[in-house]
Image (cartoon, rainbow, N blue to C red; front, side, top):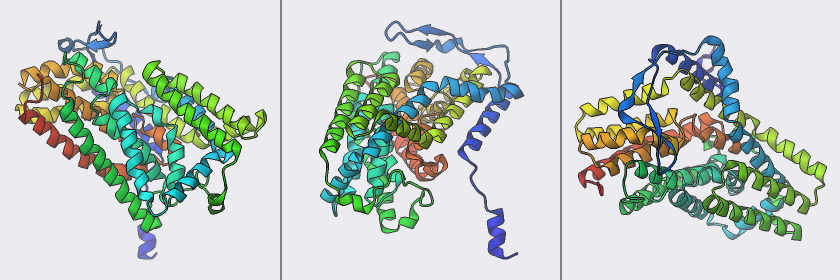
Length: 469
């Protein structure tokens, strides 16, 4: 056997995403036999109507470890618990798929390419800053999922890859969400629980947003320029993205009247989406219905009959089935932890050591603790309801302003959303058809770079007594 053959034989290969997530379910189940069960008392906040933790109420309770059979049952329970997200992915992607089949978006992208000839790189900062502002001001996150197939198609057509397209949307909006200055779902909720004036400390947060969003843009542009120069450097070079790809001959295709109307429908859909989210309180159920209307309408305008629309809808669902199931597996981890009553115990255990640290170190510790907790509680507002009643009074004890505690929560909750498999990232990867391990290869180095910058901002916040209190 040659040396090269020997190396190939023993070369480590990252397991399938399903294997990784199910392994985490098993680890969580084992943890329920080791970690003591515990819980906090919860009361309804009269201002928000949400259930919040009573900080001093933690107690150990009767263990309820998850057994062998229940570990496998957790997969089904996770699928059911995440059903709204799973079917949201199916409906939104399949609706976009119908639009893609009309060729209207292909021609829109072709037009963009012609207009940006020689300036292709400009579309990255433009799109990322726009998505980032949506996250920073409105708390946009899931609402941008529908843009992912569009931007992946655009990125591939511009000579980049799916990672760039995914990054333009998801890294852009998530960075804005994480370093937001007006995000009502994180800052608003957390400041309300901490009894801080709503959206106070905005000036410091605006500086945060500019720095973090610019770093995200530069990271994406650096990777895009590298693979533009050398396509073999792409992390996903071996994967098939033919469903997103626009063939060269299509670049000269003129818009038809039908396709122009389809683009108007898509634009109106996005406008209604933004209005519905901001003014009507819409969430994934309403958004799924909206995109279903868009898909059907565009299909008919594109000349498809009802059976053809249904056929393309099913094809679209097939394209994203793996990513949708990943969401259920990720939720299965949380189902096991909640069944074993160890989630609150982990939160309690992570928060207690902070009491023993100097305030400078404790502030950084808050950031790391919040980042870890976001694995177990992926919802921003849900995490605020559990952790801020603990972190706010803890900040008082440590002589740290509550505003610093909110900042640590904001960072910890947000930037990890593109890292932990229990958050939205499996959904995003599924839609973009990017295996989660490939995304980790792209994002993890940047995440740790961002973590260092977060720690610097936390240190500055402590130094300036970032307040008002």
